[in-house]
Image 1 (cartoon, rainbow, N blue to C red):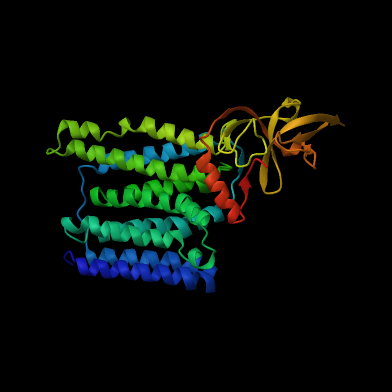
Image 2 (image 1 turned 120 degrees about the vertical axis):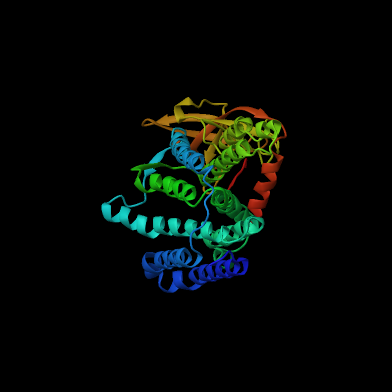
Length: 392
């Protein structure tokens, strides 16, 4: 079959229709049968159909070796980064089954679908002429993102602004990053680099006996940044082999120029979400004026109860939110500490004593005024009745 743009668009439309059918009907009515039998067979069937109907696709071989090597390096970087994050947080048991049957099931349910989907992407992108490849790559990427994102949740969940923000950060951004990478490698090599990266990163999750108890925002950063860095390295290698590129443009496209900035941004975000022993907390109320004002950022050092003295300002956990107040009294009974706290601008001490289990840390210094964006988000959360950090 010759290259055919219309046929390619029709096939992409069929894939989208199947994805919507699976999302809204098959996964609900026949969940187990769909997951373990129908879905893998459908994707494998489409891949076999395209292999037989579309024939052999032309591979760009001049970058194939480098792209595959970089893909393996990116998998290793992903695993190392993910494990390193566990040094700053706790590890937990792996929820995936690591029995032989469990591993084989994961390979059948997930790995076969990954291989089939990336082969389909590669065949469809290369079933059109060069001028249309980018458009088809965008189209198939959008379809895959919609399928993997699970658009059903947008119809069954109350759409608050924070829910949408979380979906964007936790799911959409990593999917966009991966689809940019996978479509780019499909254009410039074949489907193997995408399979290597996707299955390689998932194999670690399937097989490791322990996994970091990483907050979703940390996982989102790792899942978004590493594919983009891999994409930039592949583009750099492509530019080096392009005889029409000037030396200056090649140097400017070297991802080594931006990696230090990316690392600093990642570390700053991890610091902001409390991965390290110290973390920032924006002050949302005036209960600690004139020490801490609304919009200030208090830097909290994680500590144990016996490290806290009277006069310290502490952060402690309440039901669904945290409080930052000053310790006015510290008592110890049967080896357990209890604290009486009070907001500096409040007339009375807090009603409930603070137990040592509630302690998060103590304030070690403050930064004026830079917490106003977080306060705005806090107020938005309060209006939508979500869990917040507060200074009440």
